[in-house]
Image (tube, rainbow, N blue to C red):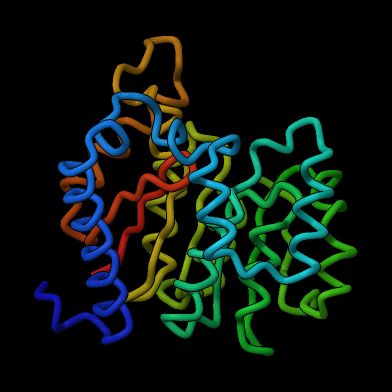
Length: 259
């Protein structure tokens, strides 16, 4: 489908991402020691990198309650798996750009990204938040309330596939604007296929951890999670139902724009 047949907001967003990618490629040619490295994308912009800190200092606009939740999550034994704050900000900006009202998040953890998206949704907006671990979600729930967005979050504590099937069965196919996938990697393909049915034309599916710390370059046979991500990456490249952009942010995120 030609670009001009896609809603204007998505066309603008896709063009912006294309410019950013082209700029990165040119920068890579000019500064090969920085951008041409064979190391993980996080090697230059990892959490201990002064470049990453510079990026945050000059781009992050974090709501005070978001910051509070991020610091709480950092104390969790698995706090490192939280989506990076710069990536969460991009997701929220995309949600706002396409004027989303209905969002699905597959994999909530403590609810940082959930809160980030809920903050930019209109008052009648809705995030269907899918997770199986209520203990982790309970860390963020009081802060959802403190931020005044608890009413926008429809938390479903059950396997995400079950929730997605329930949404389809209730007639909500092609009614969602945005989906963020960040849960068990071996189920990514199933999440993607069901999300594609739930998202309307012009909607966006964001798929996290598509680089797996660089392990997708040579997935081990016993690493089923990375094998699953690698197969999905190959599938997305050839999937004519979407336009895609893979971005080396965090552990890699692919944006799939439904045609």
